[in-house]
Image (tube, rainbow, N blue to C red; front, side, top):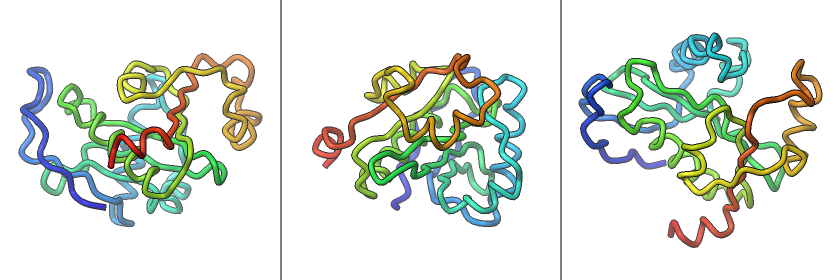
Amino acid sequence: MATLTPIAPAAPHAAPAREIAIRPATAADAGRVYELITENLVSGHLLARPLGEVELHVPRFLVATDGEDVVGCGELARLSPAVAEVRSLVVDASRRGGGIGRRLLDALITEAVSQRFPRLCAFTHQARPFVRAGFSIVPHPWVPAKIAADCQTCDLFRRCRQYAVVLDLKRTAGARR
């Protein structure tokens, strides 16, 4: 996966960026990825992930780095041969508003296309960034692989307030070439 070009200057409320790079996570990044996820549990926008799970799945993560500092992350998880999911997409609170999240999402989409997934999904409290990236809001039952993998064991099953969003990568793949 190629390192992407630097982002535009950060928004006034975000810390100024030197050069943000998006790259695959390494085992050395697992602790920081875990911290980013854990720091965002209080807001209720991410599901808890034990450190051992993050360490096990770190090869599925991409990270955004500013120099040596990991400032964001996102995971591309295979739910089935036909569907991958964007999970644990988060940017450090001090760095939000500078386009890092969108760059991570774009890189995850590109990675899903390269892995030839026909569809990409996410469950999110904030659908707007996904819709801007081309996803559509759909009823939860339209993503049965997600429901089978995670939702049935969730305490909020059938009471979930997240949006299910889906991106048809067959159409996206042609547009991204």
